[in-house]
Image 1: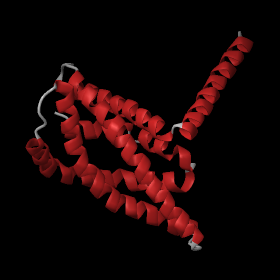
Image 2 (image 1 turned 90 degrees about the horizontal axis):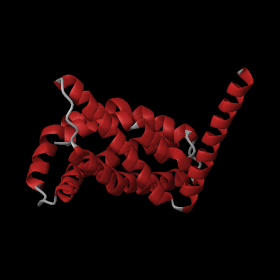
Image 3 (image 1 turned 90 degrees about the vertical axis):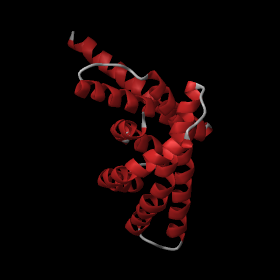
Image 4 (image 1 turned 180 degrees about the vertical axis):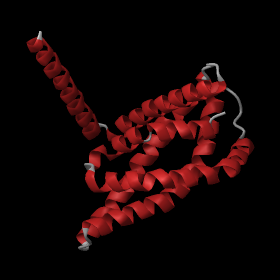
Length: 204
C-alpha cells in the first residue's frame, strides 16, 4: 500500500516535470504563440472565477458564455502578445543597464518603475476597447467604442488604484527572482485572481 502510494507520487511528479519540460520547449520554439495561448486560458479561468463569485453574491448562477469567449479572445490576441513584447522591451532595458554597470536592484527598480508607469498607461485604456471589439466579434455585432470609452472613463481610476496595491510587488519578485523565459507565465498565473477582478470591471 505505502509503496504503491510512493510510486504514484513519483509518477505524478514525473508528469509534472515532463509537462514543465514540454512547456519550456514550446517557449523556446514558439514563444509568442505559447504565451498567447497560456494567457487566453488563464484569462478564461479568471472570468470563470469572476462569474462564480458574482453568482454567489447574486444568489443564482447564470454563466455568461459570450463574456467568457470575449475575454478568452482578448487574452489570447491582446494580453499575451502585449505582455510578450512589452517584457522584451523591459529585458532589453535591463541588458543595457547591466552593460553600463548598474547594480541588480537599480535595474529591477527601473524596470518596475517603467512598467508601472508607461506599461500601465499603454495597457489598461486599450483593454477596454479591445474587450469591446472582441465581444462584438463574438456576438457578430458592430463594436460600440463610445460605450467602451464611457466605461474606461468611469472605471479606469478604480482599476489603477487597485492594481498599484498588487502589481508592483508581484513584478518586483518576477523581475528579480523568476527566470526571464518564465516571467510571462509567472505574471499570467499571478494574475488569475486579478483577472477575475478585472473581468467584473470591464466585462458586461
